[in-house]
Length: 291
Image (tube, rainbow, N blue to C red; front, top):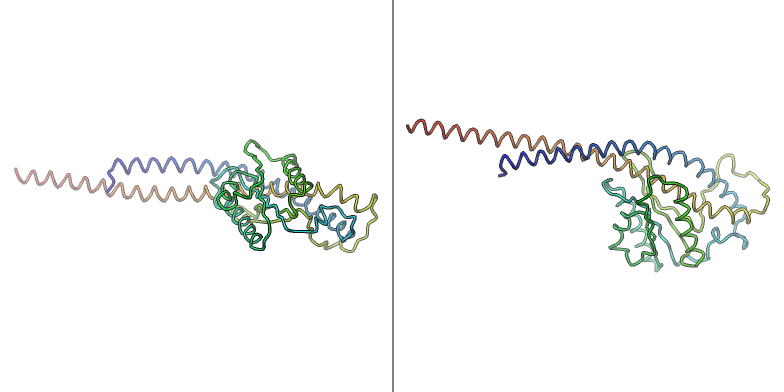
């Protein structure tokens, strides 16, 4: 049975931990608002860009003049998985859920005889996948020094991916990230970016005819690389909001768990102290009776 001193030290230790988790929760809450606004404000542009590109892609169809980024290499033998996670932990299952989705996809592709290559963005994804997919790593993007994500960060990643595609290193590229829904819900998502895959046009834009100058093929050739960067930037922003939401939720749970542990330890401490006092009283009374 632990002594009173041990229990007291344990209580003080847990109280210190609770102060830290509470502070981290407040910091995550402050960062979440900015990250959430950035992610949500980027969605209309990304959706509209997707609509325009979908219309262009539909008009070009399976033309031999279509850009390589749209029609692909004609094969799907080599797949590049771009796994985007956080640089830090202490955010619940945020990083592990993205890594798990990428791991399942890699196993599925390998089961079909495909070649898998992995490009990691963020330290935690690299650490989580190193054991199972370390032999397939082809690169890593370190964002630990980046205080605030910008479009230039997405462009750097896009240039790396596009350079590998131009060099013939892969046929299909897919990004993995977590889409922010709310503080407690972040949805692990896989999105194919090469060859470009667009949702079907619906609503007012469906069936609308446009005249393009220059040709659709020329416009697509110019916009598709920007589309890759836009998709990556949107994923980075979604990840940023998801990370802060997951961290806020995890630190809130840790703070409440610490409070419950302090209550239990306090009860145990009081009972132990009461037992010690009772024993001392018994010894005094026994001694008095002996005299």
